[in-house]
Amino acid sequence: MTSSVAGVVGQGALIAIFLVAALSKILTHRALTQTISKLGFSAIARPAALFVIGAELLAVTAMTIMPSATWPRGLIALLALSFAGAGIRALGLEEKIKCGCFGGGGAALGWRQVLYLPLWLGLAAVAEFAPPSWSADEGLAGLAALLLALVAWKLLAEIRLLRVLRGDRMVTPNPIRHEDAEVPAA
Figure 1 (spheres, rainbow, N blue to C red):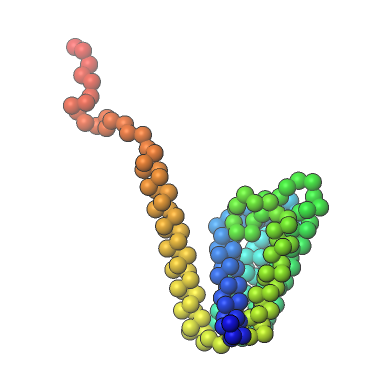
Figure 2: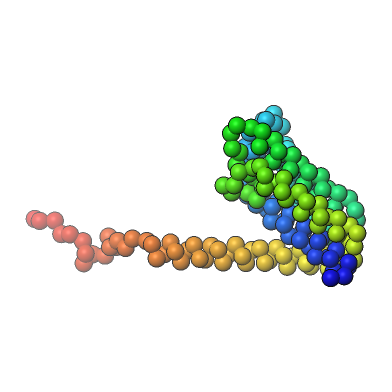
């Protein structure tokens, strides 16, 4: 793999992962606020949750339209360090804290965030040492394609769920039909 391809793959992976994470957190921002509060930061939990979501979206957008800029990958590194710090903090608490990383999932905050730190830092380093050189228009087109793929993925999941629900529904007679209605005795 050449370094330019490695940089594109590294930056593309960061864009995809952090976009999914940010969009998931937008839908379940209350879960992230609760997670931050349980970590001991209840006074600033809501603004901190909004800051994390905003920082992820800012990093994704900047990496998309300014692929060779260093600061968005630096922001990713800071986010990764804060996630690992949250994992370490959660390990020190007696209560298991639900992770708000990719929305309101059921995973516990802890070792996973610590173990992912080298992955995030590695992807950022690869992209930094061989930054992509796509244009802003190409980056936005790629981001649009990624968003469409995410929407299609979610729609397919909803369609599968709908099929399961349709197969599991109870059949009841229609009470509006007159031939099925009981006629009261006169």
